Image (cartoon, rainbow, N blue to C red; front, side):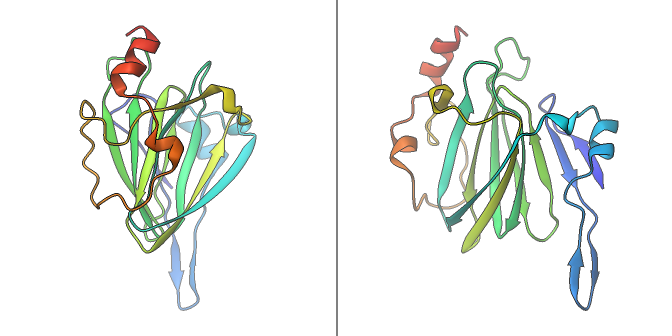
Length: 182
């Protein structure tokens, strides 16, 4: 398994090496020893979650207030454009948008450190996205920024087909910056 440091500090992209044969494939989707060798202590993960969405659907941009939430995200079935936005006050990459394609072909997955917004758009007919999270969910700490905020100017590859009411009502990036005092 290869691990790359992304342009946003703390973000790691995992690239498993699947073994393929006539039966299909086998791949290791996570290895705590390899993660630890790259500075990631995986012992803190407490919850695994999975979502299924249809082509064009956007989920996000979501984050957590307080001490934030770290997560390891992968696409177990289908393909998504995964989107991260650094909202850590004082970060030299504050406001930077990073996109990574996650799919069931090369099995890349991304470590999202606390203090980043996360979202994705489904590129395939359906996609199953799996999250390994380091904190139990607390709805009172949920943050959301509009997927189409002009300041972020995210280039979603497909027309947005579905969006939750929560995401439709999310705040602007300017409002989040004001809330953070940045």
